Length: 154
Image 1: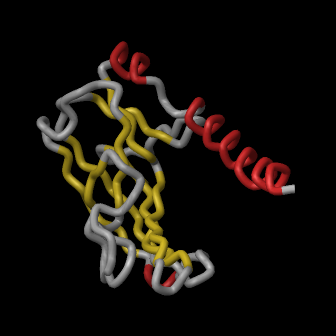
Image 2 (image 1 turned 135 degrees about the vertical axis):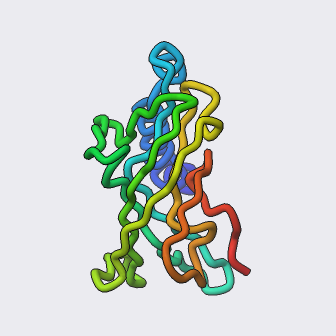
C-alpha cells in the first residue's frame, strides 16, 4: 500500500522534472553560437513554511532586446550574445494569492547588460523582478543563474 502510494506521488513529478530538463537549452549549442540563454519570462514564488503555503511574487517578461521584440525559442529562452552591451525592456506585474496577475501593478523597466555581464557561452540566466518574492514593492530586476529568489523571506 505504501509502496503504491509512493509510486503514485513521487514518480509523476520526477518524470515531469526529467522531461523539463531535457527541453532546456544545451550548453554546447550556446558555446557553438557564442550565446547565453535568458528566460523570456519568469515569476518568483516562495514557499512559506510558517503559513504552509506558496506566496506568489512578481512576474517579469522581457518585451524588447536592444529595442526590438525578442525571438523567444520554443523552450522559453532568448539567445543573447556573450560580452555584448545591450538594453532589455521588461514588463513586471504582481500577483494575487491565487497566482493570477494584478493588472493595476504592471510596470515597464529597463535593464542594462554590460560587456562583462555574460562571459561564458551556453549558460542559462533568469531575470527576476526582484531579489525576493515577499514584502517587495516596485520592479527592481536582478539577474541570477537560479530560478529561485536571491533572498528568502523570514
